[in-house]
Length: 275
Image (cartoon, rainbow, N blue to C red; front, top):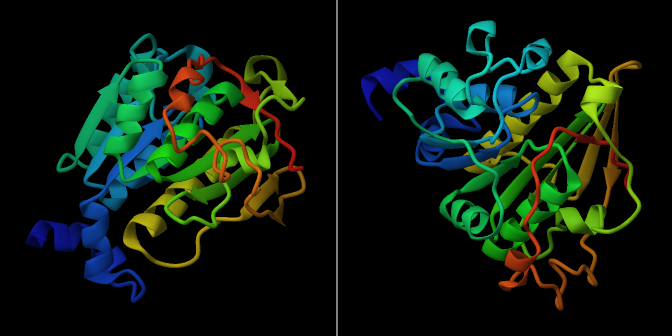
């Protein structure tokens, strides 16, 4: 670690639980952030400022005027620019010493598989169930830790699926694909701006802890936030032994998910309820 890095990350290094060793692990990590919108914006900003050595930021959309209410990676001057490129400008301005790879594309199939395989940790900051399930299958297949958040109206949620651990549940364990789960559009239902910041920042916190190897993650817990009442609630859940993705007879650890993951990345936000 250079003298400049020791100074830049000194407030992390002062933390006994993290220290130089933990910060070095963060510097050596590669985070894949899928979605550069309301959740991906704060998540990416804190991972960059926290010193994650390599960040791949993926989003197929362009900056829209309606995004500016909550998507803090972007500015009015960059309306019309690809969100991934706008994110590159914002993150490079905060921390020019890290590597940032912007990708303007929809992820599915082999492309998703390859990116997940190359990363140390994946942050799902997307906004529809099809994409979330495709990301989950890839993370199960490659045993990569997944930090997943969601926000709509005044309600948010976050959990961690540490798929390096055999006992960890996956996203499908909690929200089985194909079940009748409500999915609502931000464009029609709205979303409270600070909510996306709270959830996205919490995703960054969980990701940094996992990279540094410190603390207890949200694995096996779904954290729910009602910002109207400003009330947090925690729901515990376990791995589903019969899960079609991560169970003993599941397809997530085979190539089967590649034939199932042609998911669109459209502008919707899930209103998820635990089983």
